[in-house]
Image (tube, rainbow, N blue to C red):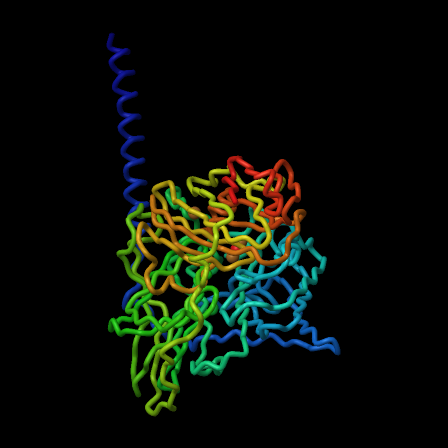
Length: 512
Ligand code: C2O
Ligand code: CU
């Protein structure tokens, strides 16, 4: 009897201790999960400006860039060098720049010891040139995609997209901007590095001087860091020498959603989003950007001004571990004592997207949840959606779980028709390729498939929280010609009215 009691007591003790330490671990995780750097950042380093990539133009007018993916060490403010990856350097990459109508070629050399890819995020181009998981570049190999730039002026970017490894490769430092210009003369600040500034924002966690790419037990979103780098600079300041400065803000973070605003709550003008200029400037005091999204903002600066770009909550209800309690100081703008004049903001900027009145060729329901879409986990061998060349489609995309997701599609820019049950806010009135979707919300998007029919080469759509993407929250679509057969999916031929083709499958119904 006594031994039984003793045994019972021992078991109880073990259970109590186990439960207690688990509770302590949960409490500790919560404490760790909230970051506050407001007022803590020294802003003692000038913001690095990624160089414009050199290029050559041959007799045929093809503009050629060279990118080398390489490992190195960087000074990320840790007192000792941080092992990192970069393009043509040890961290991040140069800014590529080309004008609408130009033929471009990029010679990419992989000098890493892992297979990677380079994807042109936001670019309208053939699937075989897209740099997704179907275009791997082995260590030591080269890949030379080429295409004609054919889209409005925009701030795009490039980053690796290897199957299941994207988070790691981007996190180590492989990312850069690709600025597309067009012929339209528009009165916005436009001198690169002077009044037109790339602002590539990434949060990093460190383990000593090393980048820490492990993540807490509850950080289902992936890596969240307590140090924000802008263009690779920790604690950056920017000396502003003009009355207005245009910031091309790119959220190049793995998982973090930012709510950008200034410490003095000043208003600024949002002039462009992912796919280019908005119809008109939108006055804003705050702006949400999820991973992969871009916005160009124009900020008025006074002589001698000091203002800090910050990100603070609250924004969306979700769990604490997506960083939505975090308060971060990001970049200080410092106005010079005399400022050169800047152009007044134009009242209108670009034609608005025009898909709302198109005939809809197919309506698709896409849901994002856990680590897969409604088609299942990403499978390189499975095509989930076949879109017919020269049609406009409506995609209803739903975030079906309690976590933050966003939605990104390759090759094209979409128009937001409805956002979370209502008309889109003014900042979502332009062309977009990536959109934040709050837990249990839906968005209705419209896109037109105008080019590059290729039944053999899929493009991707996915959540751009990179851990989710790597885990399988990604699907594939191809653009095919009417009448083409892609796997089990027959693309209807709209000319053949007698047959009234209606392909019904889990991928959505076609009806004409
Ligand atoms: Cu920015 Cu499929 O990626
Ligand atoms: Cu996600």
